[in-house]
Image 1 (cartoon, rainbow, N blue to C red):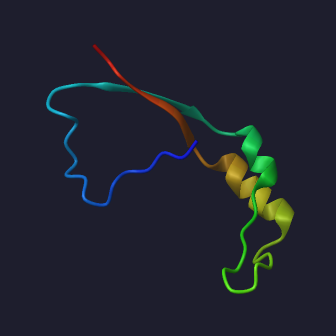
Image 2 (image 1 turned 90 degrees about the vertical axis):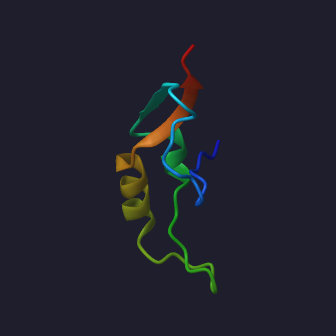
Amino acid sequence: MDVAIAPDWDGGLDGERLFAVTGGRDAPEAQQCRVVATASGKDVIPRAEAITRCRLAFVVRTITATP
């Protein structure tokens, strides 16, 4: 799942609505993490370091509008 904020977002929260955000660290997908050069496709940093960085990143899992 990919969640991104649109570049033209004005910072508003859809009027007065609140949203519940669920997320965390140490996502299982981190085991597949790599940092690669676009041109060559080769690893830029060691794979273990890339996995550690991804495990430390906060990952948003769901965003739900509250009633």
